[in-house]
Image (cartoon, rainbow, N blue to C red; front, top):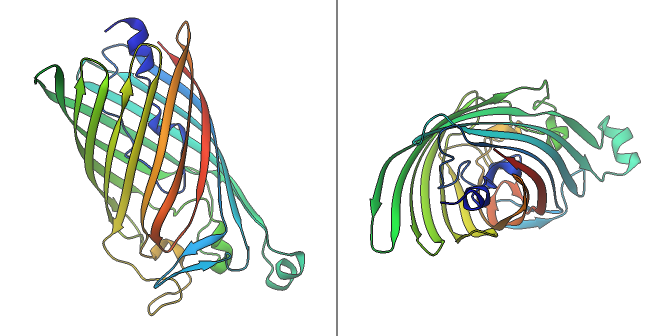
Length: 293
């Protein structure tokens, strides 16, 4: 591949951190030995409806609406042609729209903010097969995500604005991707997230299709999470400790990247939850500045 092609394959997956991972936290392209990306991005999303059980409700309890803004620093580096390492650190601000009377009565605040979780992943590409006019790549990844900031999650209904779940996660994924010589690609991945404390473990899946060419990159994807346990909000077993709830979702989105020259490019995207369980009907977008070397 040309240098321009390698720049166009910059990682755009992790430039948009959310309270839950909207996508599988790695892409289907390897950086190559000694090459990498550094990304600074801004993400904004909001919701005023909540997917509960058995139906969606209008309005967020207490806070009416929730807006989540975040800044993320992400870096990836090729340790070899078959092994990449990547790290991500987000700062998140979660804001509600409760009235002052409600805040005064409950002793709550309309804002929670701070550093969330640091994540570290290793990605391995053990096998590539030439099939027709393209390549089939098999990729595995393992990563850990653990709280970095001192944010709280045990504040009863105030925790609707919590910026994370304060659990350490061990995440494992496998992916297969076919990319044609013309730049069109399709990949699918499945993973398992094992979590500490009372946060339920979860299965995660994703399918993605797109184009990676000399002058731009674009993809569309559908991602899902299915918790293996947990209580439903306001149902039997719910104790107002929100990290212990059974959170599942389906989400769709689009991501893109355009190189500007000399290793610098712009990334952006938009995504929305289409269904879920114990989660807000969030939608929003992101933009990021990418430096590739």
